[in-house]
Image (cartoon, rainbow, N blue to C red):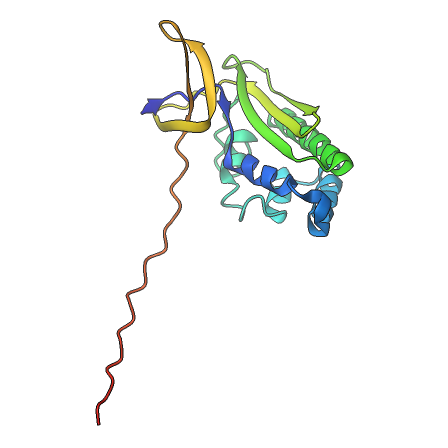
Length: 199
């Protein structure tokens, strides 16, 4: 049903980066990609959007439009989630946080997991990242103010739960925005069988 998502989410691009960090120890190609990410993130003049596109975390610039317009508040017709926070501040935090994650993955070859937690009140400047090295993984969390999402369709996140007081304490699946439906290729008509000629 439409409404406000819960305070904890995982976006598709976070999932793609998590997948990339698995098995880095056994993949020369992933290790090289990680070194490229570290070098480019360390350069403040290098666009975060272009880095993500070039390293195939987005298929193209159009696919990165949401990150560019809503998260960073730049690009064509920006509609930032956090209009009271300067784009340069958010960009610098994401750059620094992602650089820390990449360096830890490179040092330890542990996989990374990402979460977006809306822990600040709307209209505040409470925007930060936390990165933690555990025994089995690197955990990175984007801490942001709540985003008023309007009348968007929501669905249950199958692997995430929240415990809260809704007329009594209860545990339920976290609600997340319904991801855009993947475009299905039109089915090709079945091939006609050739009639065998009888002599």
